[in-house]
Amino acid sequence: MGRNRTRASASTQLPESADFGFVCEKRPASGTLGMVVSNHPLASAAGAEMLAAGGNAVDAAVATLFALTVVEPMMVGIVGGGMAHLRLADGRHLVIDGMACAPAAATADVFRPISDTSPDYMEAEGRANAVGVRSIAVPGTLAGWCDAAARFGRLPLADLIEPAIRLARRGFRVTPYLSNCIAECAEDLAADAQIARRFLPGGRPLQPGELLAAGDYADTLSTIAAEGPGALYGGSLGQVCVDHLQRQGGLLTLEDLTAYRLIDREPVRGSYRGHEIFGVPPPSAGGVHLLQMLAILEGFDLRTMGFGSPESMHLLAEALKIAFADRAAATADPAFVQVPVDRLLSADYAAQRRAAIDPQRALQWSAGVPASTESANTTHVSVADRDGNLVASTQTINSLFGARIMIPGTGIIPNNYMYLFDPHPGRALSVAPGKRVTTSMAPTIVLRQGRPRYLLGLPGGLRIFGSVMQALVNLLEHRMTLQQAVEAPRLWTQGDELEVEGDFPEAAREALRALGHRVVEVAHVGGGMNGICLEDDGSMQGAACWRADGTAIGLGGGLARRDARFWPDAPGRR
Image (cartoon, rainbow, N blue to C red):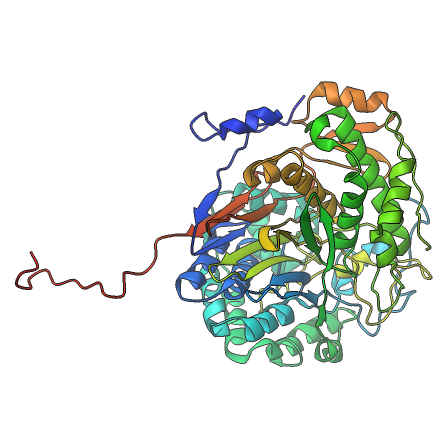
C-alpha cells in the first residue's frame, strides 16, 4: 500500500516525474532577481519583501526566520539553535554555529537515565530532559540571526523583524500541518497553562483555517527590534525568561545567556561526480557523514542501476548504516571530543568501507573509527540573491514545540535541546557545562566548475543528512530536476529497521526484504526539503516538497530603464 495522499491534478503535474515512478505534487518557482524558499508561504513572502526592498540574501533569510517563529511556532523560535551556511558573492564560505549549549549548572549526572539499552536509552526520569524547564539549553538562534544581519546584511534589524511583528499582531490562518502538530503534542501542551491557552483554546487543538494571533510575542519582537539581541542575552527580556525558569527549577541563568558565544566555522568539503560539495562541520554530524556516504557511493554505478531499483536502494541503505555506526562513535562538539574528520572523509577509508559492502546481503556495521535520539522537528530556509549571495540555514527549537512551555507575557516557546545529550555520563554525547549539542543538520551548497549550482536542506533530525544525500544522488546521478529531487521518495536506516516511503514500488520493497533488510513502510522520511537551482543564464529555480507547507517565491522583472519617462501629455510624445 502506498501513502494515502492526494495526487496533483494532471494540469499541475510535472510529466517527466513519471519516468522515475512518482509524481511531483508541487511546481517550482522561477526568478532572476532572487529566490526565497521556506516551509511556510508567509515566511517566504517576508524574505521576498526584503529582496524587493533592496536587501540581500542574508537580510531575506533573517526576515524569513523571524517570520517562521510566528507561522511555524512548533519548529523554530528565538530561544533555539541552528546552523547557517553562507556563500558570499566574493566566493567565501562561512558557517555560523548558533547551536545551543548546556548551561553551567548542567553536569554529566544532571539527569537520571531510565535505561542503558534501546529504545529508552536517551530517556531520563520524569522526561526531565525532554519536557519542561530543565530541558532548556542556552539558545543561539537570536544571536546567530542578528550577527549575520549585522555583518553581511544591508537593511536595519528592525526592518527584518517587522513582517514577523505584523504577522504576530494581525494573526494568520492555521494550516492543516500546524493543526496536526498541535494535536500530536496536545497532552504535553495542556500541562502548561500559557502554551495551552495559545494552541488549545477550550481544550481542543486549533483547527485549520482558524486565526492565530500572538500579541505578546509581537511585543517581544518589538523589544528585540528596538534593543537588538542584547535584550535576550543579559537584558530585560532575558531576565524575564530566567526569572520564570528559575522559579520552576530550571537550569538556565542570566550568566549563561550573557556568556553565550557564536562560533564561525569553516565548512567541510568533498566532491561527487565532478561537483564540489560544501557542508557544515562538527558539532553537526550532517556535513561530515553526508560527504562520507557520497564518497562510498561514488564507487558504484547508481545511474545505470536506476532510481528506485532494489540494487541502488540496498547500497543507499548500507551507506546509511556505515555513516551512523561512525556517527555514534565519533561525532560531537569538537571542543570536547576529537572528531576524526580527515579519516572519515579520506578516499582510503571510503574504499575500505565500500569494499566491505555485500551487494547480495544486508550487513550489520560497527564503527570504523575510534570511539542518540534527535528531534525531527526543525525548519530550513534557502535564499539566493541576484549578486551571488547564498544562504542555506537550518534552525530549530528541537522537538515539536520545544520544551512545550511558554514564558508568561512573552509568547516565547523555548527549546528542549538538553534532550540531545546522552543522559549517561562518560560518553561522547554526555552532558557537560558549555558543551554544544550535536545535530544532523546539513544545509548544503554544491558547486559545478567553481560556480554555485544547488543549495538545499531540510528538517528531520537523524534523517536529515541521509535525505540530503539521496537528493544529491537524484540530482547528480539520476539527472532529476530540483523539484523531482526534493519530492522523490526516500528511505532511511541507522542499522535496525529500513524505513521506506510508500511511493517506492512494492516489488522493490520485497527484493530488499529478500536481501535481509527489515523493511517498514512509513508515511514520510524526514521533513520538508527545499532548495534552489542556479542556472548558467543567471535564472533561479526554487523548489519545496510535499512533506511540509514549503513555498518558493522568486523575483523577476525589475526596475525601469534609467532613461525611461512617463509624459502622457507632452507635445510630440503621443
